[in-house]
Length: 212
Figure 1 (cartoon, rainbow, N blue to C red):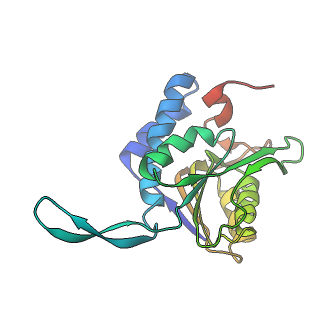
Figure 2: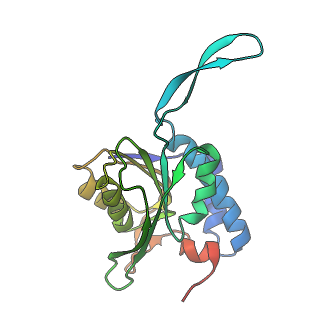
């Protein structure tokens, strides 16, 4: 498994504001959108392309375009929706699938409650977008979901992660497929409740408000 921490001043700056408990939801959403676009630039570096003939105002030349079949972007509901626009700015031709997953706060296990994905993902470049990679259980479950449908090229895009979660993903998925994680920062650890420390709190609540 490849792990790429995007070490960039703009990423660090925006993450610092996201971490601040006083940052309002409106600013939080805007910064997530901006930050994901920066992460997406690195995450899409190996998107397959194909040659195409282009007629410029001067002459004809050979350029490149994203190859078919189109990539698939899969936000994890609900927090991953806040990252979708940032990905689509760079991949406007991508298709979008959805996975509804939530964590059982007692067992920390992942429960899948909704999906909207192509049944056959053979040959498709897939991006899983989820703000937090904490225990790693959601990324593992989502990756397995895509791999079971034929995907062989899966990249997770996350704002923050914990070392424990990254180790879990590598242990569970590393031998099955070449999954790549592109992430804004790797924090210190998980606390006893499975939250990233220092982290930024519950990303879904900070994006959209608290839902009981």
